[in-house]
Image (cartoon, rainbow, N blue to C red):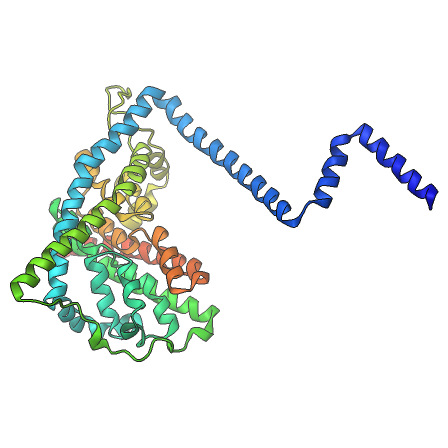
Length: 418
């Protein structure tokens, strides 16, 4: 035994002389606490993530700087964001404030309830949802996606649903999110006909998205075909939006409170418009100077998206009627934020590549998607069904595409008739 210990000591001594780092690392890792090992693995993974991010970051902006030159790229980056803020964001904020005031007045004086009663018979045959779900559609149309979640958490509302139906409200409500703002924005730009056709397209897309979500949920989790038993004891009549006071006081309070909520929505869209739209525009439009010379002006860039879309534009032309590959930028941006996507429209109008057909498709896809990639996760997480996020996103992707296709072919049909 003494001889074996002596040989082991000599072996370790020889290893320490030949490769001291190996011995230290082996000894350190072998004897390190599990907490330190987890920290080491976490730090290593974060380091790799940082290296990958920096590589992509510098490669992306490096290629733009190589094509545009660094001073012109930086100037275009800031000028585009500045012009979007002044020319688009403040306009959108004004629209949001006015529409917020109108929607609050509709809610306060019973118009929302009237619309709910009119739409209630459509819920079961079209969406396989209880009639009270019509209230959620109206609320999200007048405001934004999260409005459906505040209703879903109300016992007086949720008790009418089965679990798989309650989960599908994320797709159902998102398909109408910011609908009033989108329609009014497009109408204000002079494309009211296209906006109304797009509204119909979004309606069709919402049916497809909601039905797919319900089918896939029941297929994977049949146990969700049960009532929301934990949400009992309430009454639908208790869902009231009426405030106290006289008519004039209620009118003023509703108008001011609605305008205030509109300011919140307007402020919330600023990061999306300035960050997402700026980058998308720099990948959509080319140089504005004569002979393709970059000047550092707003809305210049390297038209990678346009170039790629033009290669397969026959697909987009047949599906959506897009006559320019640059128009693909709108639905791409709407995946993350519909407010940011609306920021692209004025530039499309200025360049003369837009028409009522494109507006119909924009309205349909903008409403139906309305930034679902950035809201579905939080909405399902708040309902306690994080495991269904993938199914919800997949169903809504299909629904949004169908909404755009339906809007295009509906516009073609109406053009042939009229």
